[in-house]
Image 1 (cartoon, rainbow, N blue to C red):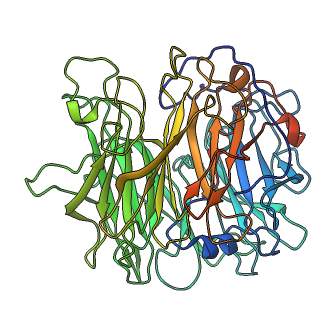
Image 2 (image 1 turned 90 degrees about the vertical axis):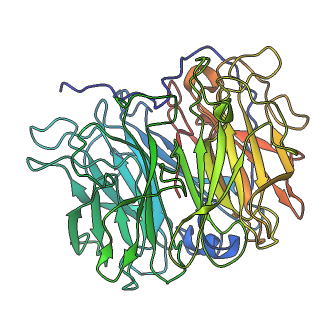
Image 3 (image 1 turned 180 degrees about the vertical axis):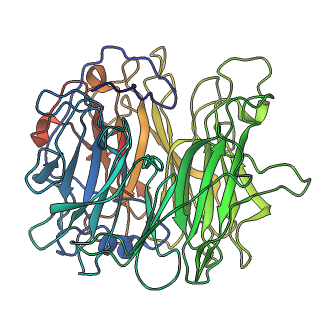
Length: 495
């Protein structure tokens, strides 16, 4: 079959890297708007009370088919993630629809939630390059069902066809009409619950994040769900940009807000600043209540800085994180915070190409009730080592997100396994997950450039003061019995 090749959003260049991975029980979970404990239940595939972690390797080779893709699932326990209790799920796994084929990209788009209401979380997997009939890259969304023994069996709940493709690269889950049943949203499709294992979704409809409905060239950078106005119905937020739009880096990036209603998501509205200009969008999005006022807030990662262009906005140098705070009327652009590596308390210095703001995730890392924000900067140089990568954790508080108390880790940090190497891209993706159910989300960081793009994941346990490098561990696909070569293990986490 003839397929076009999908590219990484940043077009990062591969290089040789050597890993020093350690495999063993580790701690973790995927970010959201609720407390760490509530998220543990939401992310529990086998109903044992501990959150589990799903890691994408959408470029993984399966059955000799390059970039067929797979997902590795590691189950939680009282000691955190247990790498001896794991699964590798692909389209060649018994009970999973379809078959592994070259350029299916199974796992590019990953989410979770109890879709059929049986008390077990289910895994939602996008396959962006899946062919359907004679239509190349039509795309599919598959639900893998949770149960007492873990994940098993699956159902294709959306597939592209003659009337349009399914684009599941940023799949997310929420109750977007407030009926008590979870729904699934992709870049362009809304699947309404309740879901059943035989029929799939109750309904399916198109969804758009471009308010004009007239811009065929717009790109969706990320999609996230959360109750921004605290009305009990999940809202949708999309980060959108138009590559052909002229202007300085970041000028074409915008934020589309779809208010959840009893009839489903409203038409998209572009958020405007008080001066009438667009609220700047970005490349990565997380939603959580960082100031504990009951309204979920938007944490927008803006890593695009022009990479050395003289016209770059100084505020975007090296990348930044922008917060738009929630309110009873939705996101309130009059209340914002911007943090970069030059902000007081944040380790590091803003430099061209750091990509600070890629790999955003949001959850409470120290159990104080305020959501915190993990921020990847995979382009960060460590000493003279180019694009080795780093991750920072910014603290939430009564006044909102702050640089005060921020911590940063890289592979040269004392206690962190491995060593910083060129193009490891450590921090390319992050997850905050409470797999030991202690009320604090642990930090998970991927370096999908590790070992010539085989990829690996690092786990940092959390304490009452937040994540620590002490006792941190790393695991890669080999330690989980998954395909290794060029897998880009860690190119996504379920959330």
